[in-house]
Length: 63
Image (cartoon, rainbow, N blue to C red; front, side, top):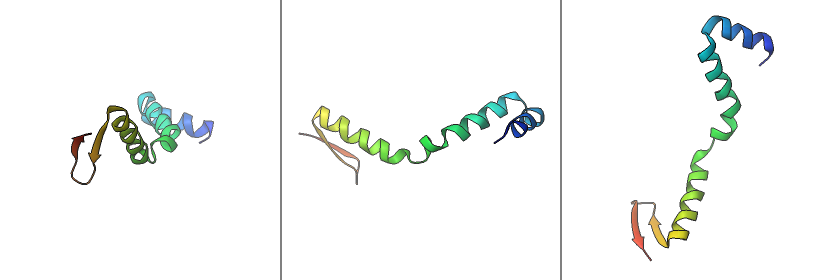
């Protein structure tokens, strides 16, 4: 995405839309696979709290 493309986007779509498009383009890598990060976070939190989470039926059992 070059400077000419950015200027064209701002001219044609407006500044707020251009900023949103730029941020989505920059954050695409971080948003590509959130489910693995959520699963890791879920495991860490459940370990710290001492609970077992059954992901197949979403039931929480205290240990």
